[in-house]
Image 1 (cartoon, rainbow, N blue to C red):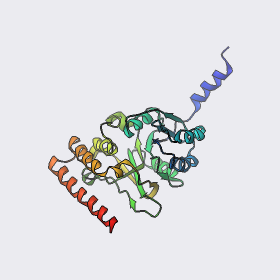
Image 2: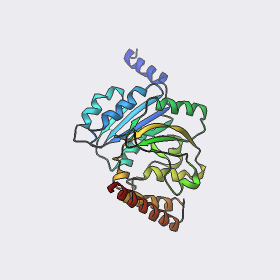
Image 3: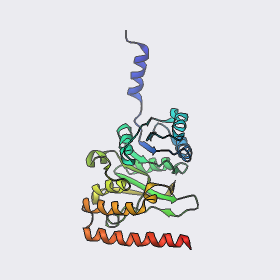
Image 4: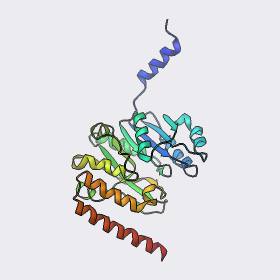
Length: 261
């Protein structure tokens, strides 16, 4: 007679509902901000939403924070990786949701953000990519994020990727994140789908985005990677990519000068 515990475990596996959404946070030495990120997501977890944390082998106390919330996580690991997109791919391999979203270790989700996404998913199940508005920096910061329209998106990253949701079959069709990109791998991935991507937009704020991300710290490199992605994915010509780089760089310099005034 089979062990009753084994039988119960098998029955539980068969009856457990597959989550609609998997949220993934990757972190490295994020002890100052990770707790706030987790606590913004934890109250929104239920049978429709699972949460995964991938740590790059932190040495600052981040592991202790992850352990403290382990019972709320579908999966967590702490080991070295080769960058953000390598860590994202690790999270993808463990995610079981129909839609995948990424929330940074210094970002926080607004109350009921995931319930809002779930409502839109149920109303429009054919949408492959959902995005929304995001507050940048702090609650009084500027609002970013626009609907994804290919004619603009192929030139500029107009969507707010924090908290955006990607339908799982996009990864089946276009692969995982290219780890040769260090900063704009999220943009490069969406360029692969091109004008065929069925995108939806939620016209409200769902997250507050930290201003310490790598794309902000390494702004010049981000511009160079953006130009490379557009050319490699045939989104624009080389000449157009160089022009966009030049204009964006001028804007960066202008914003930097204004901050000093």
